[in-house]
Length: 298
Length: 261
Image 1 (tube, rainbow over the protein chains, first blue to last red):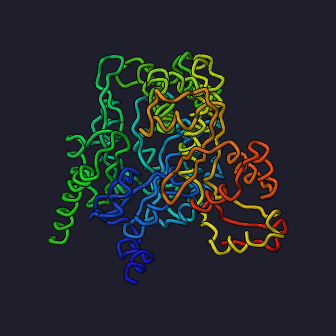
Image 2 (cartoon, helix red, strand yellow; image 1 turned 90 degrees about the horizontal axis):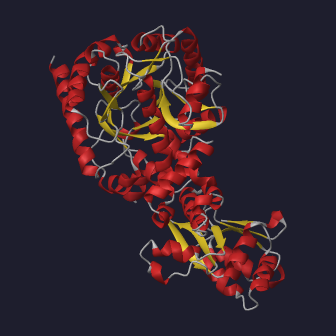
Image 3 (cartoon, helix red, strand yellow; image 1 turned 45 degrees about the horizontal axis):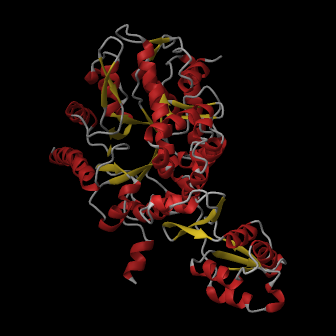
């Protein structure tokens, strides 16, 4: 009967109230079986909410099993919090159902928009930072948090363009959103690096300017390189490559300011074999463990 | 038009100019950077279709497929945030897409591939216990008025073309050179455990399963199948449904006497 209890009762780690201060990995269908069978030593998993808004089948089968052993972060990519239109209540309801089913330790979404009218554009699109968009984003986050009955984390975007209509810089805008809504920050260190290169800013200063006390999770990912119209380097947030050395360095700098924070390795394209992702996550885990040990020693 | 309307319209239509109100730190042309967003949208949606329709892509080649998918995407941007089902209207589009007219069976293969995706994600419903089923089938008075409810993953694809063989040839099951595309075929698609299964179905069985799915009685479904083939074998067709555990509920027409799992 042991196997029965193993199946039905979530492990102690899985029942934790919040994400552990460890590395996690984005869960991909290609790795379902291997993870389910080998139960690797990893802090947590993260899934994109919309992928699991399907009625049944293998996605739910494996996520239920994996959830029984690991803490979970559910990360939305389709809520369109920055859209200049009302939030989709059906989508909010679907999110509420998913969160009720899987009881994740964390729910997060993006400072971006992805819908227009009935169309879903399947990309995280940029918005100007001004008083009008601030009000709208805060109203939407208030609505999300009240509908879902929980605090959410908001992710800083990777952007390629800025708007002449912006009157706030991104860090001040995010700080004000967090202050007004009480939501936390999902600090995507790769996005900070990508945006800093793309807009000619200092990445370290960009990190320092963020509301670091409210960071609930960190994202790390790889980027691709392109050029803009002047031939200057333009970075694309591709999630299709290993984390760049410069981003690892920025991550270490960030942890020096925030202390250890649950950190997710994101890989959505060119997904490698599971051991390759696990090894990359272990690089983050080592930094987190070393930092936690230092904190204990101090 | 709001700034997001202009932005969204130009994302989907490459003939539209880069929207206004954009700036860059180094004074470079915003259009080059805007093209990145346009490319992200296009590639992600075309990739989503390529994931769903690998055999359609193999039949026409990657270049033709991606070109066709791009036209589809511009005319039919997703209406749902669930990308898994984005290809739902793709087969109808392919059927009416003039450049694909020389491959008349393409839409049928697209329908089969979409059915496989739907089956993969269909709701989990337990099959009816065999003894419940046998008890219901054993009562000859009620047999003809029985209605069988099938698993939500079950779909029948009927085509004037060799839809099953064309698909099977791309799974290595048979050699494409032996397939006559002009031969009418039907396929049964469903999920068994965690695996999607695709079987060839004779026309009478296809009519039988389709009739059951529209809520017709066992008697009416048998009649529908016999119209197509007088030799239709009910026990053979039922054995298929039983073997793959595709019956989830039986009703006798009187919902008060419903048997459930």
